[in-house]
Every structure is written in C-alpha cells, then in structure tokens.
Image (cartoon, rainbow, N blue to C red; front, side, top):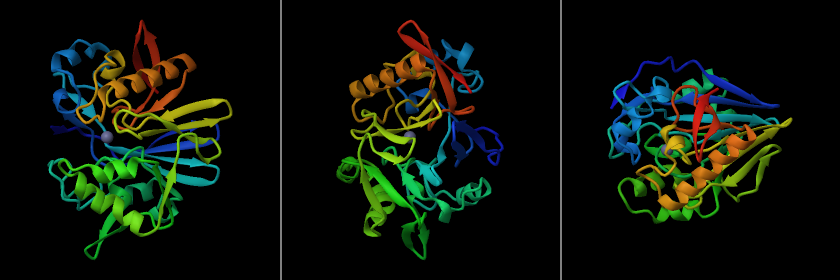
Length: 294
Ligand SMILES: [Zn+2]
C-alpha cells in the first residue's frame, strides 16, 4: 500500500447539461496489490497495462484506487454522494483507522460548507461510503450535515444492521444509527427522483440494495456508479468482482449491464474508486469493454 502524490485541492468538475458534479478526494490516490481489492492478479493487470498505466495502475502492476465523494448540484439542491470514510472512527484496517483528514475543510474550499448540503445519498453502507455521515463532537457521533435529509435505499439499512463481520457493527453504530436516531433518514426506492434529473437506479450485487444515481439534463446523461465496478481492469475482465461483494453473480450481471448501457449510449460514468479523472466513457471491445478518461 503506497500513497501517491496529488494536489487534493484541485477539484475535478463535470457538467451534464444544467447539472454540475464536483469530485472531492478524502485520501491521496493509493496503490495496492490488486488481490487485496479485486479477484485479479498482478499478471492480469500487466496484461492490460498498455491502456491502464499510468492513470489506473503502476508500471509494477499495482492498482491505484481513489476514496472520494461526488457532490451533485441540480435543481437548486446540493447532494453529497457517498461521504467517504470519516475521521476518528476505530476500524480494523490501518488505511481506515482513526483518520484525521481535512475533508470538511476541503469540501468547504470546493464551495460546499457542510451546512449547505441538502441531501446525503449513500449508494450503499460500506465503511468507505457512509463514514462522514457523522462526526465526533464531545464524545458523541452527530450528523455531519445538519441541514440534510439522509437518503438510504429501501432494505439497505436492514442489510447493514444485520451484518456481523469485522467492522460492520461499529460502522452501523457510529455512521448509520445516529442518523436514524436524529430523525434525518428517509427511505428511497429505485426509480425515485431526488430532484429533477437525479434518479436512483437499482444496481444490486455489491450489496443487495446498492443504488446508482442517473443524472440527465438537456439530452446528456451520466451515472454515478458507486461500487458497481471498482477498477477499470473490470471493464476488460467483467467477471472479476471485488473481494467485498455480497453476491458475485449478481455483481457481474449488474456490471455488464451498466458497461453495455454506457458504451451503447455514450454515457459518462463517474466511479467511486477510479483513479485518474474518475470519469470515463466506455468502448465495446467484442463482448467486453475498455474505458477512456474524460
Ligand atoms: Zn467502496
């Protein structure tokens, strides 16, 4: 595991018609042995390194991952998607444990003080997608975004609460339960529009009720895909899932569906863990795909 240099104060932005999306990183880009995250070897990476390196992989065949949030501005509202890992949270993995990062200062510098967020939307409730739901104040976990409604896909809260492995009970206790207790949570369903042009799409597999977010405006479309795909290598090898998927077969079918849809309709994908610009277009290559940064 190796952190790579990057100016984290340079905020990548996309316009999808009248909708604007801003990317804010929590951690520097980090290089990992691929087998830690996805069901792939270094040789699998090296076989595709002509198009993966240097944005998405190192010359040695490590995969580079981002940990970041996307903030949507649409219909006069601000929607924080997947608020990362969070500070001060006791976690089993050293990458995640008791962080002390200026993420809130960073989103403020990007133009989004935490009080200005209208909605928080978690694609799912894993450790790196819901951490900043809360922050530690005087020994208590309190909602980080006090003026926001927190939107959870139907069934995902129950799924997260029932998880007993590893850090799951701690994640639920410090990052989900305080939101429920504060009365700030709303349940949403696939097909629901959060505001005009921002619609939830069921993308199960990584978790059973995992949702992606479809952005449409003035004939343009983008999808924020959460953990449907973790690394661009999975476009070329879509049968490779992450090591953290609830159901690999469902995950593969969902991933193929999104890649096929993006390639055939020229849709921008904004991907939680993709390094480089994190926004890609998809090109078909037989019955698999390649991606290009945009
Ligand atoms: Zn993730």
